[in-house]
Length: 417
Ligand code: ASP
Ligand code: MG
Image 1 (cartoon, helix red, strand yellow):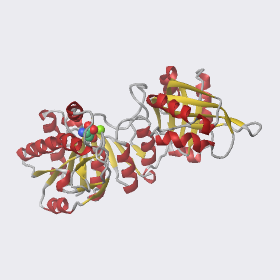
Image 2 (cartoon, protein in one colour):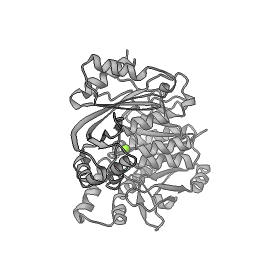
Image 3 (cartoon, protein in one colour):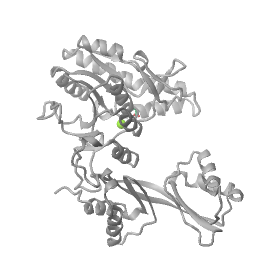
Image 4 (spheres, helix red, strand yellow):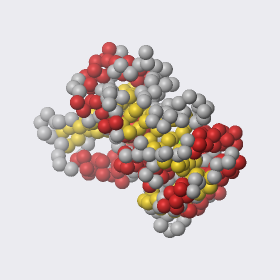
């Protein structure tokens, strides 16, 4: 017998028929004797509709009242799933975040979970009860409902799994796992059996939108073994109830991955903009003078490349920001021009960042050179490069995005055979 958290996203609970299907997945696990807490999202599209209503009510509104509105989508699905489960003979009960309680900080609309008291749920597991928990929400220090930011029910699920000391957190979604790259770009992409937390964090933040990034951070910190799997596979299909090895992708500690490949996946992020400051005075404090004001303007700066000046007086600085923040960044830089001391600023929106990700890179030389050679072979020009221990990121023209992803996918032997 094990303890499992099962999370179902919006498309998995989009209507009553699908909620019935979800209930069959849950029943499969309870029939096998497992203790189960279910975490649900709102029905597909519901949260966006609620968000839209708050805007229609008033463009400027109290974030606490926004939370009171948008948290309601999950309240509906938790109740509906409990009703269906009960009708199937499963002893289920719905829980709102405040009832558990799931304590958060007071950043309404983007709150962080601080603490979960799982004791009552654990007691009820002992009586054979299944908990159906509304995701995406908790209780702020002001005793009001707080929501966790869009996509936040992934984070609710992982946090519940950590609090309940669950053996596993199963994230059921509309894809059947995490792939080596986006299958819409490269049909030869393969589903990964396992991926390390650190790698998933890179994949998630680089645009492989399977999980909320925060949920992966939390899983990594608390070492929650997390399965990404499909709710659209029949609940009684072969292997679905296999405890050790269900179909899907396991996100886990790297120690659990015995046959570590050098490269695990290729991620990409569109809509990057490049900004270059030319003939910048090369002196202590110049980076602070640039990136301080950008940070204050809440611009998320990503790649930063600075050249070493020839004569110790002038240098160039290039960095990337989201395309949507380019104009704002340019305005900030223009305002700080005196303080920074540069000659001209150049910018280019609509670029793409392609990243090669793999923990195996730590112990292998020549991984970056392979990428550069492969892209050169296709005539793709590289605009900027950054690397970390487990990642190489390359900035290119958007016209070459798909070619670059496919080329790198193939050169590292990731293609499905
Ligand atoms: N329903 C919320 C959203 O759409 C939370 C979630 O689904 O994870 O963002
Ligand atoms: Mg989601």
